[in-house]
Length: 153
Image (cartoon, rainbow, N blue to C red; front, side, top):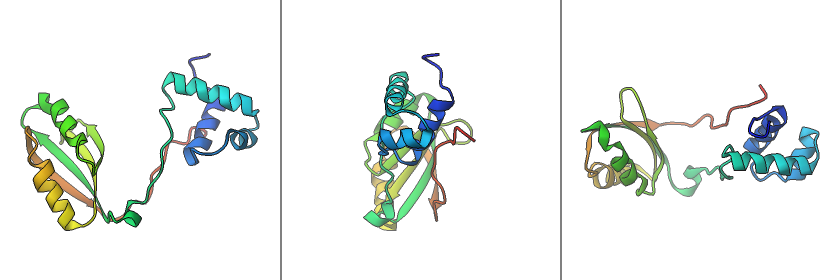
């Protein structure tokens, strides 16, 4: 049972997904368990690799990054995906990279300050990566939701 997740673990994950900085005492109170149990279970889930850390949820538009763009990338040769992904990871505005199946070989998420910033990023940083055959861009007009799975539902 040490390497399996149960309902208590799922309750802890659901609470921490909403607020990763919630104190263990508050998690315990809301879950109806002891703080020691929260600590022990959280440590177990970290050791299992289920919990990889805690992150901040940022509103990039309030920091001057007004554009969110998704790019579907076609490669010249499919075996180049690792090299291209490593090069994409060097671009600070690229925040997500997925090796994907289907129409695109790689799918990425980029934040840019405005259309000029995006154009420069696209033309000077992304299109110049060796191995990229083509790109389709999708500009996000609004992010309505970003969440984790509700494990209790």
